[in-house]
Length: 193
Image (cartoon, rainbow, N blue to C red):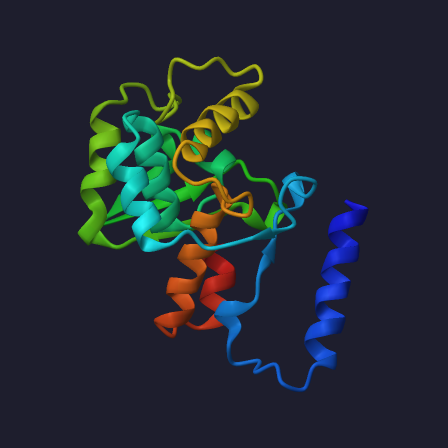
């Protein structure tokens, strides 16, 4: 934690002391990965070609679906693991995903899903019988669930992406950058994340 805090303040100092930094280039500012700071201080976006390679070459359908959900909704890996059927609500033609278990208090939120991507959620709902049942990785027990699944997913990602600063959390960064590039108001970005 101390390393993350030190890196955060050092980055702020460098950013604001360097007159050549254009603050409108927000998509070039890196975010920190606090829970894995000893391995990767700064999270990088995963390139489009790398995402295509992952989705083409990873054979585990639940891991692919996790990546797609993170790209579509900006969810953290643990938030995806803990999604249950009861967390999905449909209003007219749109699904809303209620994140009820998150790393932070502000992470408890409801995120709309653009109806173009309804098929992703509908397939998960079809394969889930009970309201309290997890949408993904149903066979994994609750004890150490997040830790076991994180290792499993990162093992699969590392087969194709070797760069240590590109981790599952990078998909969340990709989502954020897409929102900024599409001129989504910062208030909404904060609400969605």
